[in-house]
Amino acid sequence: MNPPTIIVALIIFVIVALIIVNEIKKKKRGESSCSCGCGGCAFKDTCHKTKDTD
Image (tube, rainbow, N blue to C red):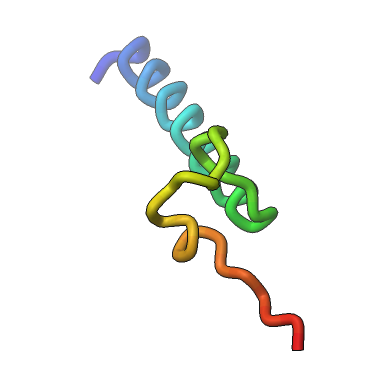
């Protein structure tokens, strides 16, 4: 592999890693990854489990 190919591959790897880290942080904060709200989503109960308030 030549140097330009390695540089492009590293840039793509860094971008993908940043996207994954951002999605993990959003998931931990309880934010949706689709940015459209969960009111009509069929999977809202599995995606955002509600805490019992006993």
